[in-house]
Length: 167
Image (cartoon, rainbow, N blue to C red; front, side, top):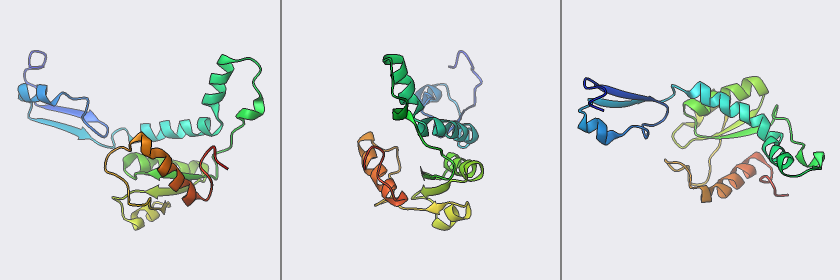
């Protein structure tokens, strides 16, 4: 890095972290600061999430994979559901969660439940969402994939239905 940019003073990333930056190399190069601009891509991430929701609700990934593998699929096995007016559960109400909630409330008229151990319930309610709590709050770092079924079950019970794939 010093050879490529010997006068470099600052390294900044867009997004929630700076895990893509080699901090040791920055230290060796005497970079004065490494910063992140959380929320800089919140709109893009929220729109990507919103774009994926109808495809998942309509079960497109499974249908597409099946159609590539085997002839004669049963169309009825892949009929999904509309997302308008449905309930969405969001874990985390930072830049992306807040923007996603705004889009889903305005564009799809969804009921939005929000779980965020770091936000006051009145802050969530002021955004038009319903504050909910998962037992014991949420961990400060990303969930272990092994814990997802428990959280999905809890959200499903809050939303008043069984988790996907269960009666």
